[in-house]
Amino acid sequence: MSDNTEKLEELKELMEKYNETVESLENHEKDERIQHLMHEVHQKILHLEGLQHHFSESENQKKEKFLKRHEETMRRINEQLHILHHYFELTLEEIEEEELDALAEYEERIRHVLEEIKRETNEAHAALHVDPMHPHPFPTQHHEDDEK
Image 1: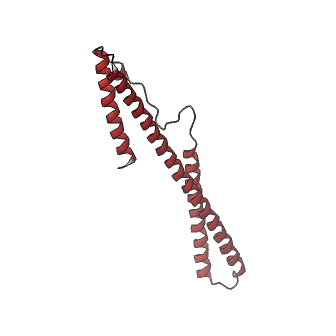
Image 2: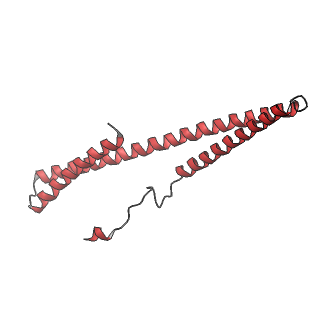
């Protein structure tokens, strides 16, 4: 079962227990059943919070692995670019014009890939930084329909 499906099932169970509790309170049933329902609702809330925390951690771990892979790729591409540039300088006099064009194209393509990886890495770094005032990506908005 996926994380989202599991969370939705847990939320559905929580809402059922919550509704039972509210119904019991409306009927002024102040007995052990209300305490039991309140305890179950509290346990479901704790479980949902735990699922959300686990899901958030795993997302951050994925982002960190992504960044590490990209940093390693950038390092390797830089090494290859330096080797290619060195080779290009050493053999400049011996290479025919067609081969020079091919090497220049390869160098340009490597630079382009490096720029793309840098851009993706910067975006991933930006995605890891969460504003403490807005920890969720889409804060809930107040709607006029909610007041009715």
